Image 1 (cartoon, helix red, strand yellow):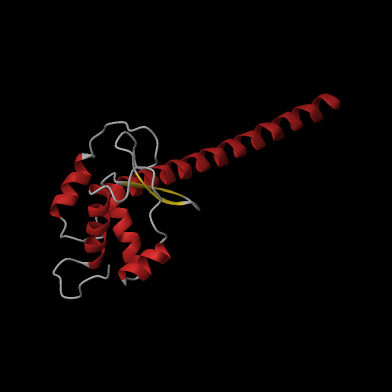
Image 2 (cartoon, helix red, strand yellow; image 1 turned 90 degrees about the horizontal axis):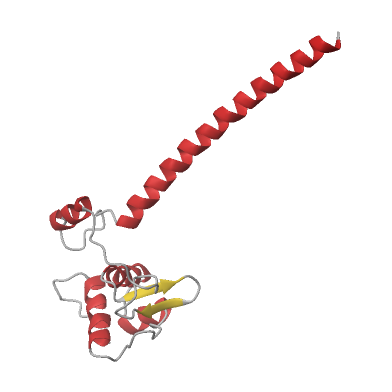
Length: 154
């Protein structure tokens, strides 16, 4: 199942299409483990980054989910991209707008996960700053208590 070299679509979209077709035709069923990245690279004759981009497309479509250090599996229609039971939601407006404006294959479109991670990182920085401020406040209070104890001792 090698990839055509003269096709107008990017190789990762072609690879995603081939895997999508196998899933839709039932050759790959819910719960089935997809071949490893190395096997897909060899089988499709594409680069590792291309394999990962193709799998990302299928994850975004909800057709597969990945388990770290275990592999990528075909999703059950009743589960989400992590294999957990699906919770229906719609993509944020900013993501939908960015996706519509992007050229096919444009990797610059932020993913909801990237945005969520950026928000978490910002919250972690804020929390770290608050912890530092509290540590300084505690140190100041400890100094005052120490001064009071010395006064009382005299």
